[in-house]
Length: 309
Image (spheres, rainbow, N blue to C red):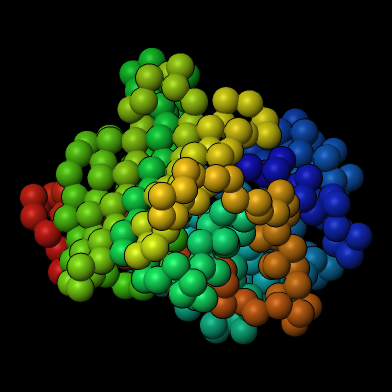
């Protein structure tokens, strides 16, 4: 992910990447070369530098808090990848540090910068196809499969590492649900009930066969239309199909912007620092709301029953 962010920043004329830190200089150099920065193996040299305005944290989720809080305490604005944290106390501590330091803390809620999701959000806002009745999402990976080469990677439970992205989308499009139930182990589905006939299902799997490419998608059912997205990461750029079906007409493709969502969200971060954009889109509060649903999914799985939110 560091390389993706480095490439995004490298294309911004008003951004200078001063340095890249990793566990070794060799690892840092691979990313630093992308954006013509200096490699470091000690993150404190960057975090404590008076010449740096912002820190971008692309580290394993379990250690986000340590580096985010340290950077905020040193007066830096911070962009942090999703999930923000694996536990609520860590996430709230990061938010509290940002408020105390009066610095910007933005979280990589990536789907909000993806064209198809933005399009559905606009349709929800306009009401042109009526009310959004149900939303189904899926995020399918093989990282927990016994044969997966990255089984021992830094990724952890699907409820946080995968579902957080789509749980954020659910709240962004439909608001806060009343109840949540869940089932599964490694391949998990959460059902979110709104108490008014609306509902959402969020599926995340780490158990797909290793030959199955990482796949994400959604089905958004409105009163007068249904949108469908399927994105398959079997090659780069990934293959993506986004369609709408209404009435008796067959489904047809929806034209959307082909912009890079990573560039879009990081451009938004930079513009927020400059006071040119609204920070609420990727605010830490939104990430905490999504994390709360991830943790509610864990409780529902542990208790074997629905959780009231």
